[in-house]
Amino acid sequence: QVQLVESGGGLVQAGGSLRLSCAASGRTFRSYAMGWFRQPPGKEREFVAAISWSDGSTYYADSVKGRFTISRDNAKNTGDLQMNGLKPEDTAVYYCAAGALSSDYVGSERTSVTMLPDYWGQGTQVTVTS
Image (cartoon, rainbow, N blue to C red; front, top):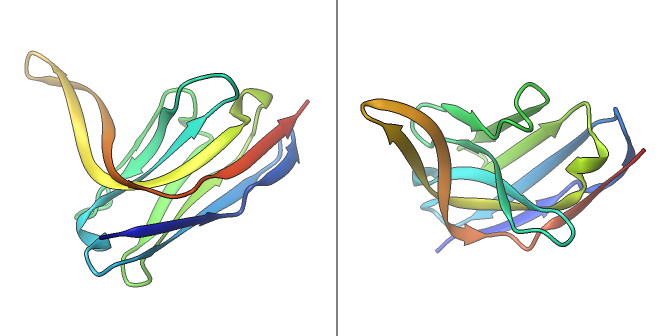
């Protein structure tokens, strides 16, 4: 069993930065991939970023690539999402998640990586004003 608690959300102007943190409890956390999802107002929850538990490989949605950075510290059972260059369309409730990575392929070519969560945090609100 893994419990996840997010922190660090808030209100920021466009172009600003925020850092979200996720604190995990449960001895098995380090065996899961860790990721972040978000749910904008009136929309479905969507994948943002993920990091593997083994080699620290990172994966991002195209909409945040180059602006967001995911990291984790297995020794401390924590993970972070550094968000720079925030835009109003980044406004959402952000959720920390633990689970497995999932890849899509076209033939033998991997086209995208996302995550299949087993555990969710309670969410933290991020609001970006223009």
